[in-house]
Length: 128
Image (cartoon, rainbow, N blue to C red; front, side, top):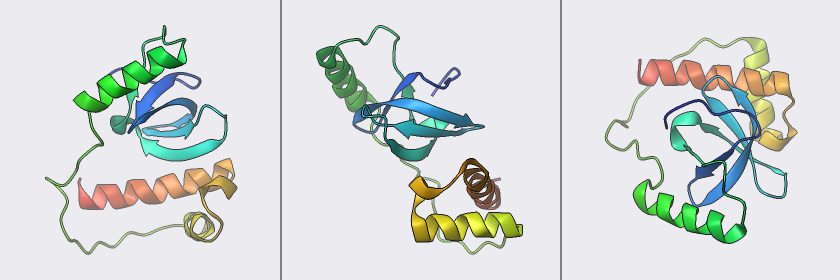
């Protein structure tokens, strides 16, 4: 992924086009065309759409072309079994447990920030 991705812009993620609902550093919150929350993804796993994708047919054609060129992000070449230890704050633990118990949709912005912090700490330990 190159360039900046702003809130409200369209991106291709895996096999669909989504709207960026929020940007938090390198983490994007994507919404499906219905406007419902879809998922949190790393900015490197999306491809920005050109601004002129207006019709459904144009979007489908673009999605298929991009999917053929850039399939799902593959980290298998760097992934390995690992044991890591990270220190997390109480708010980060609460966010992690809340996401596990209630799902990502139920998290408020502070909880999402806490979850993103935990993910960032884990990533830094696994791949500095």
